[in-house]
Amino acid sequence: MNYNEALEFLRNLTKFGYNFGLGRIEELLKRLGDPHRKLRVIHVGGTNGKGSTAAMIASILQAGGYRTGMFTSPHLHSYCERYRIDSREITPERVAELLTALRPHLETMVKEGFEHPTEFEVSTALAFLCFFEEKTDFVVLEVGLGGAIDSTNVVVPLVSVITNVAMDHMEYLGNTVTEIATVKAGIIKPGVPAVTAADDPAALRVIREVSRQERSRLTEVGRDVTWQIRESSSEGQTFDLKTPGNFYQELFIRLIGSHQVVNAASAVAAIEALAGHGFLLGEKEIRQGMANAVWPARLEMVSADPRVLLDGAHNLHGSLTLKKALTEIFSYRNLILVFGMLGDKEREKVVAVLAPLARAVVVTKPNSPRAGDWAQIAGEVKKYVPEVFLIEDISQAVQKGMSLAGPGDLVCVTGSLYMVAEAREMFVSG
Image 1 (cartoon, rainbow, N blue to C red):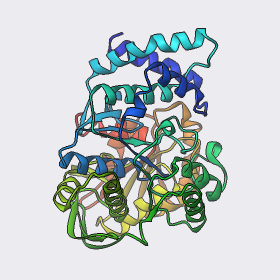
Image 2: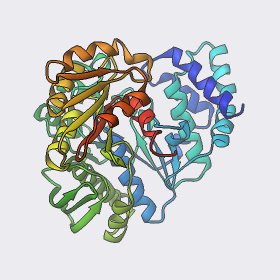
Image 3: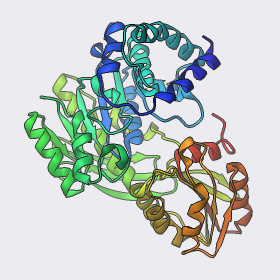
């Protein structure tokens, strides 16, 4: 297969949808020689902040001279983004080569009576095979959805990280924070240290109890790891960080928003947990890795005139974080919101958080089969904002938002990551 044929093959696998359980991927990996068992993994789950935290962990490891693989999803512009080695995405040719190697195993599985693995299971297996063949020293592995029965959960990591727990993907994970936390805590393994920045009391109770049962040493960000922000702006943040063993003064990250300092604290706690396995990374590597870390489409400024801010605030927790940044970090005369969310999200609640901040809102359609009745949300927006526009095409919607902006105004493009990714292509390459 060439790259385009490989992508078409993967697209066809979406017909298998979400089909949870580890049996299919375990069978597939067994046929590949169980590459995941030969990797040193840092496993990162949680509701929000997984990607940013993973990027910071990987950046610190890379600064320490370790060849570091990182698997994240979804991608913004290219499927290759999901697989990075030392911050560089693998080539389209490599994706095609790996998938060509996987395909006969998939066909044999089906012939032998096994269910066909899902698209994400194939993507995950591809990651393990890639990072094993590329002889990576570490792999930073982002959970796809949930934790316990997510296809990434076949690993026994060196450390497990749960960034936070909030209401999201309720149709798959449960209708209460306790239920969702139980699923996410499934990545905590016997005797493996864990880190969490969860601050919901119900979620914390679950994570503490699972850690106790698994005899996993739990580091709580906010209790065991604390921080103080010295300076925060649209250029980045400087903060002091205190862990059980160290005190770091004036760490700098380019990522914007106080939530990114929490993610940074989680990343450092995960790195320090590696010391128990004999991997010592010092202040120099942590400082350098933090300063180098980037994670696009999260409070990312992509235009100066007019100012355009992108943020993939795809759920209620994310929208509250965005609101905090819009009210505390960014200054503007008027806010113009370009908004598009998937049909399975808490759209009304997100609108109630963000719409009151705006002078005008442009509602658009995410490029996804899960967009649902995307236009219906305009009626909800009109409860808070008199000036509402409905434009299906994403690029036209962004252009409309920019045309509404006057001197000193800020255009914020937010909602589904699929929509934000398409908007981002208007401003940056790759």
